Image 1 (cartoon, rainbow, N blue to C red):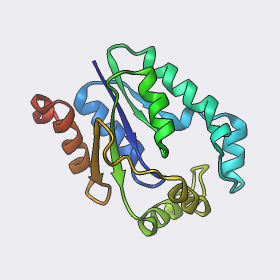
Image 2: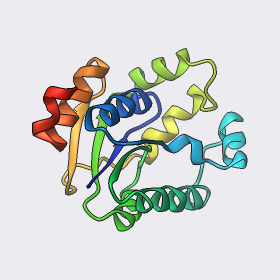
Image 3: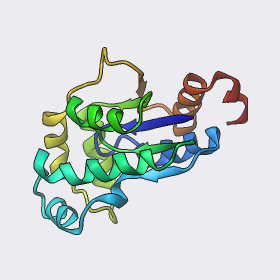
Image 4: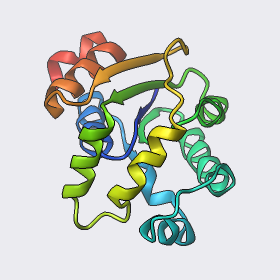
Length: 168
């Protein structure tokens, strides 16, 4: 079984990389944004940053979604704080994280180019303020999010399952 969270701030490429990694590992993709409540989506769309309390039910749902997939899954989730990652680890022992790392200016530029997403560029700074980098935590791979999507996915797949890298 393989459980993986593709994590990082908004604009780092979680959805695209997550889809490529899920395909490379032949695992289902769980898009974390789909589990946000309507009220949380509305808050973000209005430019209001979510609090830890706002994220609690969302994280519980994501943990339950991982737990109900005993064969594994690839989850896209910002997982900005260590406490959030620990909640997810409790739901899926052995959970690993691929951190798509990029700087604030690049994140702002990417989010600013998205027109149909509920997360506005004005909230990017709040994600960097909340981010507790997962450096030194077990089961974490840091990847440069500025690399091409397929290169990032290939690196993650090779880390998770070295024998599967030729299938990507």
